[in-house]
Picture 1 (cartoon, rainbow, N blue to C red):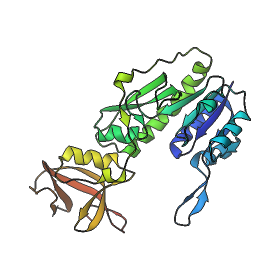
Picture 2 (picture 1 turned 135 degrees about the horizontal axis):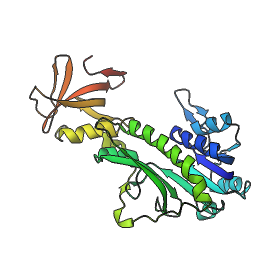
Picture 3 (picture 1 turned 30 degrees about the vertical axis):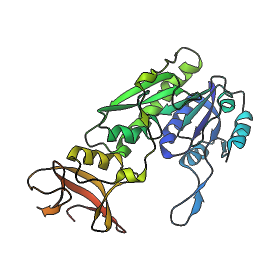
Picture 4 (picture 1 turned 180 degrees about the horizontal axis):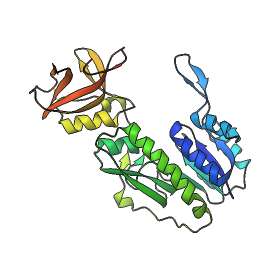
Length: 292
């Protein structure tokens, strides 16, 4: 059995951790320090820390590059490292610690959507398919050679949350089937074509504002793409409200930005038609059905 280090922090990294533990001896789980969460502001462990402890694995939480290098060096020699949404850049001296380096589970079909927000950008762009890639980590941003990948369709109603949930499962499957083959040399990584690369820039909160003058397809992509974070929003008077779910609608003719109620449905006029707001959240209130 190969030996490994696993590095990750949020819940989408947990399935890959569990897969890594099934096919290797995980010498160390590395995750970010506990962060305040909830109204109490009490520091809480990351989902990866909780999962690692439940699996009976040693867990470290370095706060900076120096501490990271120290905790990784302490478990060397080790065959390979697996990284999924860890939260800290890995420097060259860190990447060289495992014998076969580090591999990353990236939630896109590289070289499309390198960068911080590949799932959201795929939905916002209207991509008909997405996928997950197991890649060799190097100094560049998601530029390493592709070990393996798996493509899936993006459904017309898929939100970013729904798509990410599908991709986490596929990513864990790639780790389970292909990590050991990469380590023993039977699976040869293929370099990416840099001319085909696109970049998934970090999501900025202002991007989530809906313009009623935009077309229905553009508005609906924003609603799906910014769910769950930061949530597509618009203003009704001076009050902000979020739109969590919507769909095309016929019937009423409304001006862009005009709201109407028809047969218990909340309708919004947009640049080229009308959409129905299925789930909304007024500022300071809970989520509710548009009809309510």
